[in-house]
Image 1 (cartoon, helix red, strand yellow):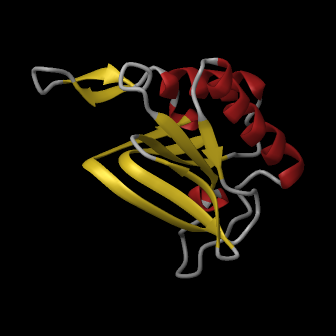
Image 2 (cartoon, rainbow, N blue to C red; image 1 turned 30 degrees about the vertical axis):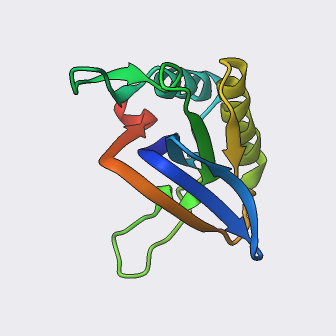
Amino acid sequence: MRAVVTRVSSASVTIDGQVEGAIDKGYLILLGVGPSDNEAVCDKLAEKICNLRVFEDENGKMNLNLEQVGGAMLVVSQFTLYADTSSRRPGFSHAAKPDLAVPLYERFMDQCRARGFRVEHGRFGADMQVASVNDGPVTILYDSEGGL
């Protein structure tokens, strides 16, 4: 799995002119699933992100996690994180097919909810417009192929 986690002061996803999900302080998570991903990888990624400490404490150090600042998550499916960029026109055959990707996308969100977080989301496979106000900016990349 691949995840791009951005610390935001606000983020939203709009589909067909309607806001599907929106948060204030928290993480905008662009989440991609690869063909070799499984539930164990998904659970480990959720644990890592839920415990990520990138919010500033009273000393200005990135030492607080999402729970400590009362933040939420906006999770957007992003198969293009698995783009083959060897040519000018990216290919997407390295992304998992929906029969694997959808259950893992849903499981990731369920794992985050089980840890007490409010999770907003887009719609898998939809044409979405994502807006965010990056805070910092702070952006962290997770890739299970490189080890979590």
